[in-house]
Length: 442
Image (cartoon, rainbow, N blue to C red; front, side):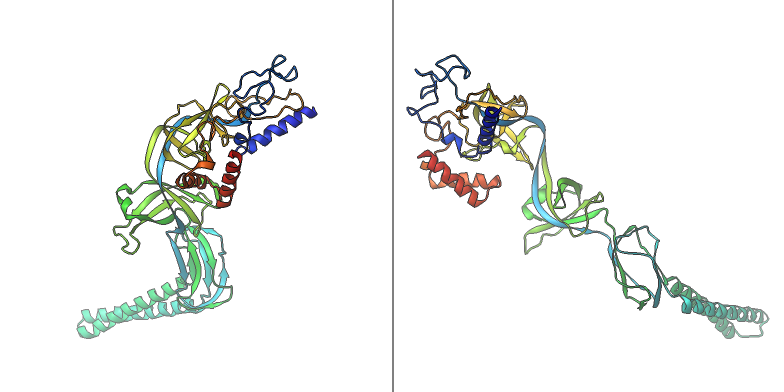
């Protein structure tokens, strides 16, 4: 049991260190090769102890543990990548339309309201009295107008006197209407469906006309305004699909569409303002910073593979395919890229298995054992103490078509560094990795 644990621990260490170490650490031709094999992998004259995977006089190099993923067919798109901040299309400051102390406060920050829901009430006592006064004035003006009408019909009064009575009636009607409007202003209601973003007053506070009471917003849908370079104008259209990522929900993407395209180009920046509309789904909020991916083209039924299968130590786009227990190096041509997948234009076929963990440091023809992914097998544990997991010797400088870091030109080295940066490595990690590789190849 202890032997099995020791072997499994060694295998895990090889898989984790696959970026740089083991491919360069194998024996060179002519040096001490693993027991049972010559420098070129032929059977040697002195075999290891019996019971190690073959008859006496024979041993074999252990396979490198790897993880694989299948090459598939699916749609893949190209994007314009940019960023922007989310904002509400309807974001208003609600103000008082009349004055007086607040007697009832019904809305708080974060409350979701429907259009017409009452948010607060201002003391109505004085304004209600103004309404009653206006009603009395209207009654008096109405009676005076009725008398003037009768007198005019009898030609007792002149037209001028009648017109004055009519004017007083109309003034009284307008005064009552104005008093009633001001009375209604004592009740502040939500102007549309939305959320209370900020409450700016307190209960019993004496407010004045035009004083801010609340900030009120509609959270769904939200807008995201982005700036797109002028040269991309021909690739833009209303209704175009986009996807947004936000830090608060890193594993989700939110579908959006182009709502408006500015008809003018900003002469200072050379960009066009494009407004996207996105549904909040109860998760997005105004002010969030979003990474935006604007879809410009889509390839349906494309051949795709995980992006992490790419070998970052090569000068060109290469992967390792697991075939018949060996790692086979392939040069490929890439197309569109998405977050975690990449389109393969040539070099791979659907159904093939690419190595996604443990490929860095492999050489063409290295024996591999699939521990995870399609065709995974259990790790062999019935080994004798002292047998290690070693990769076979590198086939010449650089090993199996891999670059020779010790003899690279400056331009080649910068290309490799660029590929490493594209895969998320820091400059410090890159320098350390290249140093280890150069030392191993001396």
